[in-house]
Image (cartoon, rainbow, N blue to C red; front, side):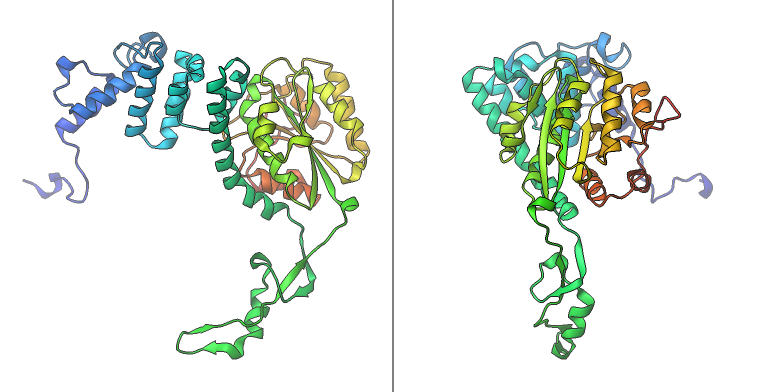
Length: 409
C-alpha cells in the first residue's frame, strides 16, 4: 500500500460499528434495528426518546416517536436517575430544563418522591418558589430544604469573591504587622526577614509580617446599595441571584444594603437579609410589572444620594407609566445617585428586553447591560469606587445598550 494512503497511526479511528452505534443513538433506535447497541445504550436511547421522541416537539427527523414519560412521578423520578447516570451535571440540568418546558412537569414538583430525584439548580429554586403556596405541607418542607441546599452552594461559590471585591480598599500609606493574608506586602515582608533565610530548605521563615491596613469608615459614611429587582416570571433566575447577593452584601460591614422586589406590588425584603432562604420565600414570582412604582418607592427612601448605588434589575418591559419612570431615573442621576440597570443577572446568554426603553434609559447616561453572577462582585466593586462603568464593562467584554441604537448588538 502506498504510504501516503495509509491512515495516520496517531489519529484515532471510529469503527463502523461505533459509527452505527452513534447514529442509532442520534435517531432513536427500535429494538429491531439496534443490534449495534448494548443494553446500557438501549437505556440511554429510551431515556432520550422519552423526552425528545415526540415528532411534534423534537422534529420528525430528529428521533423516532417513543412512549414518553407520562404523568407518573415515580416513572419520571426513575427517568431522572437514568439521565444522571449517563450525563455530567451541566448536561443533566439542560435535559431537566427541557423536560420541564416540553412535558410541563411542574405539577410533579409537589410530589416528594419526584422532588428528591431532581437535579438542584437556580431554575429549580425559581420553580419551587412559584409553587410553594399550592404545595402540600410535607412537600413544602422538603422544598425548603432543597432551596436551602442550593442557596448554601451558591453562597459558597459567590460569598468569598464578593467579600474580596467589595471590602474596603487597601490604605497603602499605613502599615500593620498583623495583616490578614490577602493584605500582606510580600516585598517588604521578604526584605524584613532575609536574615531568617534557611539554606537547607532554600526558603525564608518570616518571623514578622508586613502588610497594608484597610480603610476604616464610620457607619454614617458607608455607601448604600439598593437592589431593586423585577420579580415578574421572566426574571426568575435574576431574582434568585440578586437575593443571594443582597444577603452577601448585607453581611459585609463596609456597605449598607437594601433589597426591594416588585411586580405590580412592592415587597421590601431588607429586614430579612440575614436569612437568604427567608428572602426567597418572600418573593412572589409572576404577575405584571410596574417599574415606575418601584423606582418611586426606592427614590423616597434614599437619604444620601451621593453615597447611594441604585441597581435596577429588570427587562424594562414596563406595564406602568414608562415616561414617569424615565423622569424618576433622570432625577436620581441629577442628585448624584449612581444608577445602573441590569437587564439580567443570570448565567443565561443574551436576555430578552425592551430595546426601545433600554435605549431611552441609556440616553440618560445610565449604563444598561446584562451581567453574570461571576462578574457581579467586580461590578459592585467598580461601582463603589465610582469608576466609569462603561469603561469597566468594555474591559470585561460586556456589550452595553447604546442610546443611539434600538438594539444592544
